[in-house]
Image 1 (tube, rainbow, N blue to C red):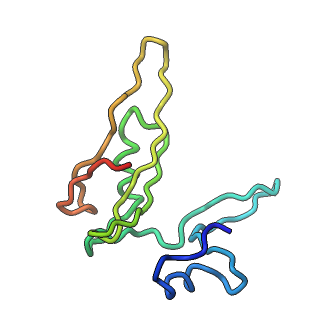
Image 2 (image 1 turned 180 degrees about the vertical axis):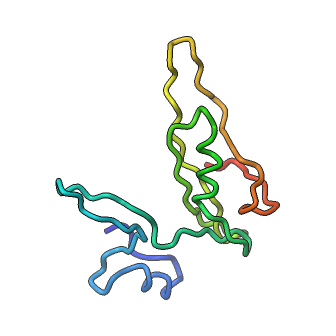
Length: 124
């Protein structure tokens, strides 16, 4: 079991599970010819931040342009004051040689059209 349900949100809990108690992750997938499961996209690919729509794909595309980033995925994290906030999961490029430094500070986008006027902030 992933978790028992959302605290004091019975409707959200009911919507998140199938009748036989499987958790609906929102991931859409397919099996390839070798039997591997491939995640192809998300069912709900939208994050609502203070009533504004933020598209994870747009944020990922901006962050992916940074030369230090090898891979990036943006997900929504629940936030009590704003509903959800985007969180970027980043894999940094490997240094091409021992003398090539990799960034040690967080990388953040501060403003894009999909984020409105809400500046990015670090979390966790």
